[in-house]
Length: 113
Image (cartoon, rainbow, N blue to C red; front, side, top):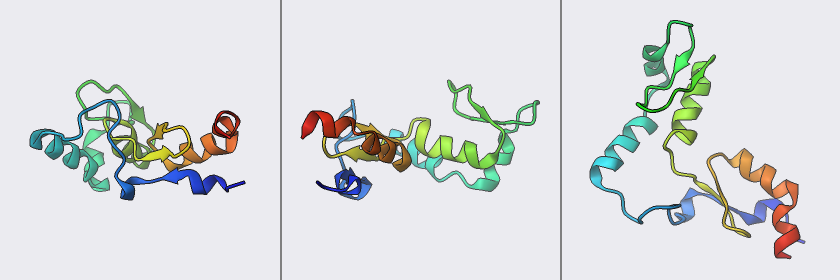
């Protein structure tokens, strides 16, 4: 039996986008790159009155206790494309740890072996 890591796909293999067209407009790409490249020091601009780090995106109401949590949210969760894909079932995840948990749960192994 293959190890769980052998079923992992990452962004270097450029998986097709999920639920969208294969090419994004240049404006969408610029916005995506801006949020992805947001520096850790820039996050201090987004502290709300409660002392929590508020996501600066228009429709997102999430806030976090730590700046690093907000940075992870912006990079992987809030509008970011899911980069980690299970090669057995095709399900995609925003973080490698979520894919690893999926593989270790045995969900794919049950249905695809």
